[in-house]
Image (cartoon, rainbow, N blue to C red):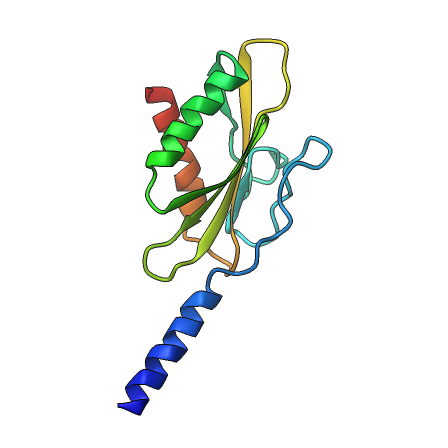
Length: 150
């Protein structure tokens, strides 16, 4: 019985450690943080020559406020998504994997523009591990598809 309790406690400690620490995120000089060398990150502001990390931004015709409302609606209905920061030009969300409870940080940046052609820069990265099996790229593409459909 004590072995079982010890095993359960150790398992919970391990799973709690899978969340990782929150990296330094946000907007710095109109830029999202660059992706690390590991393949578990995508960023629309990465150089096009960095195919492993580069992904297209999300485009929208309308006001930044309309784009943000649409995006927040999508994020609020997404599974295992926790909206952490909502600012005028920035949204940060934590997505948690179902089984291992790994956390991915997803950021959306709405650069200022005078036109109604809105570009939403995106960054999605795993907090820990090396590979994400393409989950971050798939997540952004799914959000992009839902954004177009609404």
